[in-house]
Length: 88
Image (tube, rainbow, N blue to C red; front, side, top):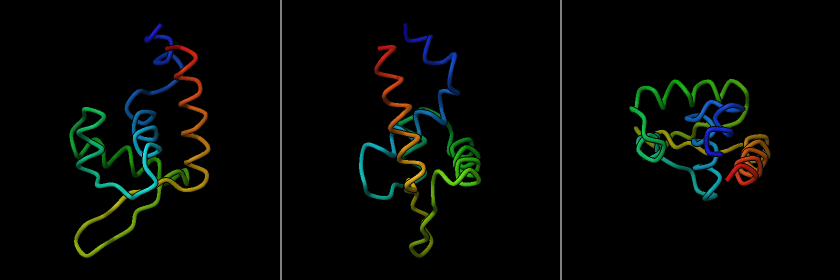
């Protein structure tokens, strides 16, 4: 059944949204990359795409960029999690 989830979603972007959903705090890109098992550069490309769709926002703190879900991103992540649970 695990493969059923992958039919509907690209795994890494979906897992990033779910990872960001787990906590209300902003997160570092490098930590997200480790959580979803991808390189930092791949994570940045995914996050930039998610930002274009208005799902995540970058917050700059000095030299560090923090990532957090927007309200729209939170809703999408909630739906993805519900679908993931159906196929678990």
